[in-house]
Image 1 (cartoon, one colour):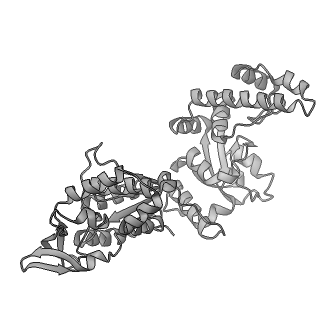
Image 2 (cartoon, rainbow, N blue to C red):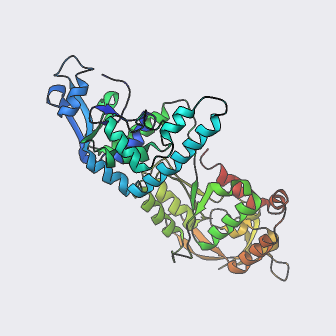
Image 3 (tube, rainbow, N blue to C red):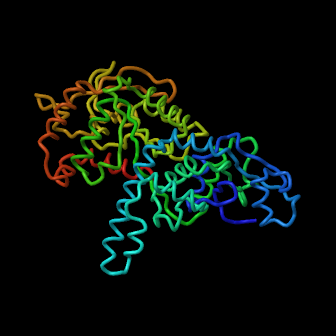
Amino acid sequence: MSDVNDIYLDGKSFGDLSMTWHHACTLCFANGDLYRRTVKTAHPVVRQTMLEWCDDPDTEISYLLAPGENVRRRLHIQGYTDERCRDLWEREYQKHIAYLEEMSGKHDLQHEIAAQKGLSFDDWIERANQLDLDHWARRGVIEFDLNDMYASLALELQYFNPEYVWTDLASFSDDFAEELTVHQNLRRLHQFEDEHQEFIRETGTVLILTEGKSDTEVLSIAIQAMYPEFSDLFQFVDFQEFSIQGGASMLTKMVKAFAGVRMDQSILALFDNDAAGLAERQHVDRIKALPQNIKTMVLPELELAKDYPTIGPEGERHMDVNGAASSIELFLGKKALTDRNGELHPIRWTGWNTQIKRYQGALENKDDITKRFLTRMKKGGDPIALRTEFSELDQLLRSIFSAFH
C-alpha cells in the first residue's frame, strides 16, 4: 500500500496535490464520502488501484470517494468557475510562449514554439482529447502547468470528465475517529501533524477583535503610523460600516461565532483590563473547544493606571485601576488624557461585578480623549519618534505583536 497521499481521478493520480493533501481533501470531499471496506469489496475504481499495492484482498481499507461532478461543483462554489479557470489558462499560456521565445536565443526552441504557439484554449482541449493523454498538463500538447493546481483540477473535471475522484487514507485510516465528521478529522490530523513536525507554523494575517469602534480605530491608526511595516499583517472588524454593537459581552459573542464556523485565520480577542473585560475573558477561556487559532488577551498592566484619579461613593481618590477600569484610552498618553486645567480626566466607578468581585469603572470624556489622539496622529511623524512619544501605546502594540508567540 502506498505511503504517499495522492488524489486520484479514476485510476490515475492527479498532479502534485500530495503536498497540500489535507486542503485538497477539504475542497474535494464531503462528510458523506468516507468508506471503510475490504479491498475486494471496495468501489471498482479503488479496488483496481489498491490491488496493485495489496496482495491480500481481504485487507480493510479506508478511502474518500466522490463523483467527479460533485467535486467539480464543490470547486465551483469555492471560486474555481469555468470562466476564471479559462482566463487563468490564457494568461499562463501567454507567459509560457513568451518564456520560450525569450529562451530561444540561448537554445534551439523553434520547433517547440512552432508546435505550441497560436493555440486557443479550445484548440488545446480538442488536441488533448485527440491524443487521449491521461494528465491535465497533456505533455506533448503544451508543456506547462498552471501554478494553481486546483484550477488545473477544475479544468480537468470540466473538460475531461473523470467519473470519480478519490484518495486512499493510507496511514491515516486508524486515526479517523468514527464520532467525528470527515472535515473534523482532517482538521484534527492536520493540527496533530503540525504539533509533531519540526517547523514553525506562520501566524498569517491576524484579525483583531476589540470591544468597540474607538478601540479598533485607535489600534489600526497606531499600527499604520508607528509600525507601517506591519500594517498589512493585521485586520479589524468594521463596527461603523455594519453598525455592530460594542462591549465586552459582544466581543465574547463574536469570538464564539468565529469559533463556531471554524475559521482558520488567526484571531486575537482584545478585552479591556477592567472588571467587565476580565469577566468576559474568563468566560471565553473556559470554552474547552476554543480553536488554537483564537487567542485572548486583556490590555497589559499600565504604570500610569497604578495611581490614577477616580470618583466614587467615597469621593475623589487615586487608586490602581488596572483590572478594574483600564481601557485603551489610558494608553494614549498624558497629553490626550489631560483636561484644560492640567488634570487627568478621572475614572468614575459605576457598579459591582459579581463574577470577579470588584468594581467596574469608566473613564470620563472618552470621546474627547480619542479625538485629541487621532488629531495628533493625523499630523504624522517618524514612526520611531511616535513610539517614544506614545510609549504606553507602543507597549500595547508590542504585546499584540507577540500574542501568538
